[in-house]
Amino acid sequence: MEDIYILGIESSCDETAAAVVKNGREVLSNVISSQIDLHTLYGGVVPEIASRKHIEKINQVVEQALKEADMAMEDITAVAVTYGPGLVGALLVGVSFAKSLAFALEKPLVGVHHIEGHISANYIAYPNLTPPFACLVVSGGHTHLVAVKDYGEYEILGRTRDDAAGEAFDKVARAIGLGYPGGPKIDKAAREGNPDAIFFPRAKVEDSRYDFSFSGLKSAVLNYLNACAMKKEEVSTPDVAASFQKAVVDVLVEHALLAAKEYDFKKLALAGGVASNSALRKAMEKACIQENIEFYCPPPIYCTDNAAMIGCAGYYEYKKGVRSGYDLNAVPNLKLGQR
Ligand code: KG4
Ligand code: ZN
Image 1: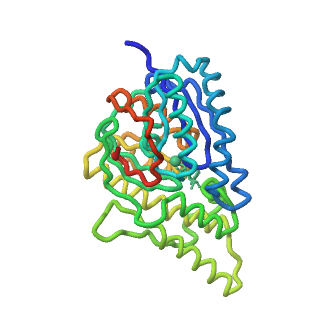
Image 2: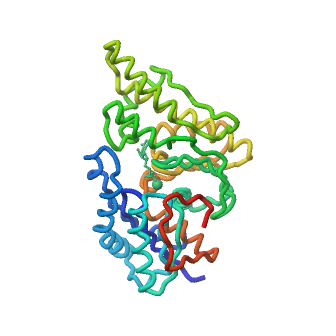
């Protein structure tokens, strides 16, 4: 069988990324140009700045990915690109670039869903992992509990009703003065704190046991900080970070395990930026061991936005015969499983 080399391109948020993936599972290169330092100045991602930076970087990043893979452009089998969901201006840079490249090289173009990419990061980290499995996707924009029935075949079992898990981390980090990006900073601060120091609510969503809600938790943290200020009590940042993190992790683990057990999944995977969280990884692994469920979690480099995961997802879509036209557009609110 002939080898298939996919050039993956990702620009949905603040990372400009390109990668070459061989036969879906072997990463030959994985180049990520992060804009984090730039956006830190503003306390969050500024869409206009993100798009402009993508334009500046994309040529260089793709060239570097090919160079590190020791491949010429002509050796690529197909180009896969994230076309949603994400920031429209940011997505358009990757989509336009990929379309031009595919056209010039006369190679197939495959549009990829960003969340499908995050889920597929598990296939890279675990070459023997095959569907079906349950996957908890937790990122800055998404919190989805997904039944991965087959390659490219998904059923969303639960989702957040308001803030995404990563968004809650980022907002709480800002409130306690840790700055942006909040997730890694809370993760670090929490190591010095007591997770049982303050009780924050674990929200349940009525009539949907797998759905999540984090806005009440965020408000509870803000109320706690205000109450401390009124009483002129000192706030322990590590304790707030650890207690907030525990509240998020408890709910994520409880719902994911409930779904895995009820749907009889023998495997459970994590994906997305928040999957880098050390407390979440530890707690989910422990719960899986107790329930005799195999636990999967990609290393942090494949949890954050990257293009290797897009190359991997693109491979399975390509194998199914999916081809995008030169009219492929960015779809900021693209639903999982939608084409
Ligand atoms: O998947 P990702 O890189 O981008 C999106 O698609 O959103 O996720 C970024 C999110 C941010 O909200 C960031 O704060 C969060 O992932 N994050 C973390 C950690 N590392 C990144 N959250 C908690 N703990 C971490 N260690
Ligand atoms: Zn992402």
